[in-house]
Length: 117
Image 1 (cartoon, helix red, strand yellow):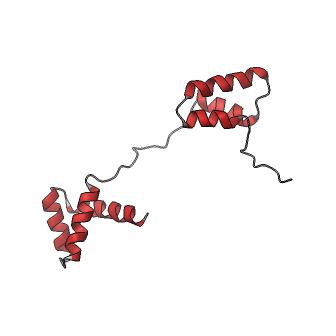
Image 2: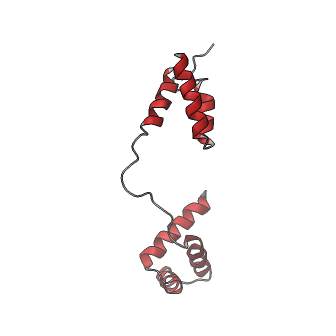
Image 3: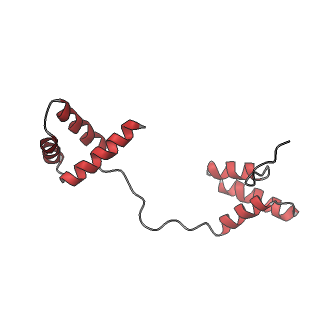
């Protein structure tokens, strides 16, 4: 029989499920129950430690999508399909939406990335 991976724990399954569903109190109750019995494995102990002191979040602000990226991307691609040059399409889109050309370029990049997925 094959060995189970190191991060696998039968005890941790209901705890991780409760955390994923947003039921933190249920997860805490289960962790406490397992710790009090003295039979908690190392995965459950790590989950308990993370509940007490969560891991540090990365520095800086989380990146967000450019404002109106979908509308700007559609407008730009419609202009390009109509035969408008790249620079003119950027200028027209930036004037229509009231954003800089850099903002429009970023919105187009977000739009293209969203379409490729």
